[in-house]
Length: 208
Image 1 (spheres, helix red, strand yellow):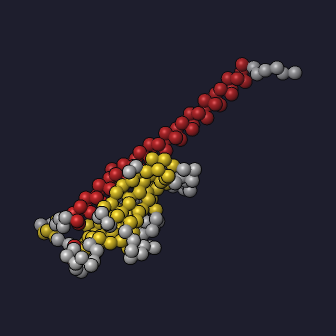
Image 2 (cartoon, rainbow, N blue to C red; image 1 turned 90 degrees about the vertical axis):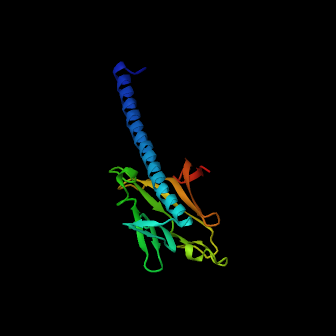
Image 3 (cartoon, rainbow, N blue to C red; image 1 turned 120 degrees about the vertical axis):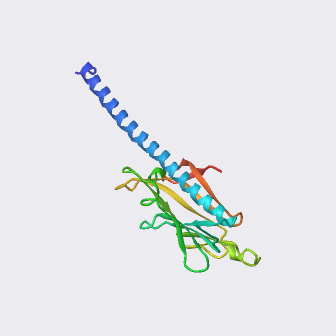
């Protein structure tokens, strides 16, 4: 009858445990590193969006070559469709809508924004959302100078948001890193980073 383990068996068990610990440590390190890069992506995008919103609210001119353009309407579009996955900053002077900047999270966003690598990519989630800042109506108190439109948004809607998900190619796993919250009553777009994740990988606590 065997009363215990031999030294060789104990060494084998310790080696297996060590290998498993090392493997899982590397997995969690990669995901933590990717989360930090994803948060950097959100911060960089927020810088562009908030600067454009400030330009719209203050009627700052848009420079096109040597010309200065003063739009009557500014647009901030959040295309959450998987084929879109982009933020478009655009304007109009009364005619066609002109794209000032198109930030595709899986395409044309600058590489130093860290929105996509070979191991992960960032994804917008939620309904399509358009924020419109209409400078041509600011003197009419019966009309809103800032409005929201998109899927499921009613005329009485004052707030909306879009989520940012960290995803991995070929995997259904995702993690919500943050969201942009729009409030037309205060004419603001705020970035709320996720501080805690629940067991369904959704954010249940954000910074204020």
